[in-house]
Each structure stands twice: as C-alpha cells, then as structure tokens.
Image (tube, rainbow, N blue to C red; front, side, top):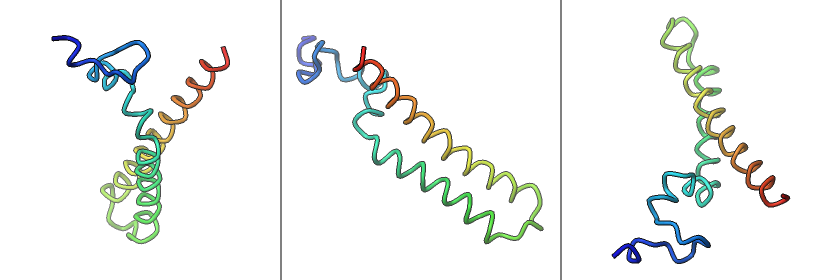
Length: 90
C-alpha cells in the first residue's frame, strides 16, 4: 500500500507528500515562483508611484507588504538554489 504513494522519480523513494513539505514544490516550480516574486516587487513599485501618498498608512502598508512579499519570495528561492549548488559541490 505504501508503494502506491511512492514517487518513483525520487532517488530515495520519498512519498509525494514528503517532497511537498520539504521544498519539492520550490525546486520544481522555481520559475513561476520567481515570476510571482517579481510581480509583487513590481506591484509595490507601481503602487508607490501611482497612488498619492496622501492616503495615509494604508498606502504605506500596501507598498511595504508588496515589497516584502517579493523580497521574501525571491530570497527563499535564492537560498534554495544556493543550498542545492552547495550540496552538489560537496
């Protein structure tokens, strides 16, 4: 029964849920996640430029939230790429 859940493409035979919870989605979907991160950064910049700053704290929080989401997403992808290359070199 456990073999039905096994991912036969994974070298250690880990289950699909194990790959999901241990960064497998980050490895297989890096390009779409990077595009989402860049989109968040772009949205934060557009909101900062287009919306007048007279709207008060909501404007500042929207800009900070969009920029933070983009930076965190791209930073997480960068850490994953660095770890994978470091593991491959060792």
